[in-house]
Length: 286
Ligand SMILES: Nc1ncnc2c1ncn2[C@@H]1O[C@H](COP(=O)(O)OP(=O)(O)OP(=O)(O)O)[C@@H](O)[C@H]1O
Ligand SMILES: [Mg+2]
Image (cartoon, rainbow, N blue to C red; front, side):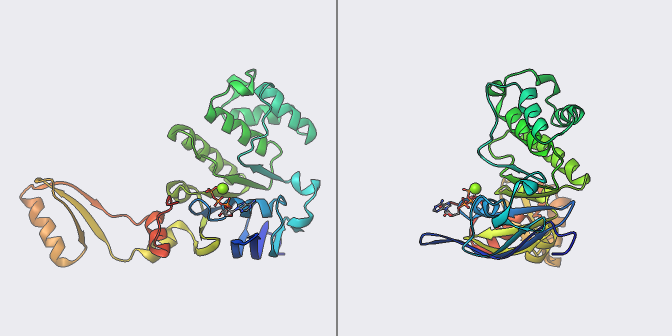
């Protein structure tokens, strides 16, 4: 494995009894890279994270994490990764500080690092509060704080902002971008295409257990959205979508001269529309 490849999946497949949940998954993760697995419910996102982090065994193929086979993952690897998934592992009766301090002791992390992380997730003023009394967003930030306390090389996040309000989601996004700046590699799963567009260097579009497209959000949007279009709302409340042709541009100019245009938008290509074009399904379809 190349030195700067932190994670490598080669031909990973997973069968649960009769269901083939993952089919021939291949990918790599590098330092300072945010890689997103983007797919609807049931696509195989959590299954992928579980295989990589040694919680589940693949049916075939090879997963290598920090040079070690995921099937043989041991404490020395867990010391260098952080995992945030549904089961938060937060001790509700303990305070925020006690929760973090307990892990700091296990990982031999100095007290100053606990303080630093608390500041990063903006929980310093709640450090004496019982974890069980935190709001949902605060709890999610505590989970994240615990996952990065020991400065892991790779951080795994399964749907990091699902169910959070937009403000908390934005705070978490900012924190993830800061961690990326520090050189941490982040592997995240999401079905939120805006989140993926904003955060990810590369995304894998996962559909029915297969990577159907891979690339940077911009690359993919350009690849699948060649024809430029405009959405126009006229005075008579009629909404029109026009392709960019010389004739249509003249038409739009005419409406504008007559002051008949209420609003005009360019139809920006999005990952959502790419996903729809590739799979025929929307990302939030069940
Ligand atoms: N332990 C299991 N036994 C049998 N089938 C399973 C098991 N875990 C997952 N599956 C199936 O594998 C498929 C992929 O599930 P997975 O949890 O990986 O999806 P996901 O992309 O994380 O979805 P979501 O967005 O809903 O979290 C689903 O059809 C699911 O029902
Ligand atoms: Mg999942």
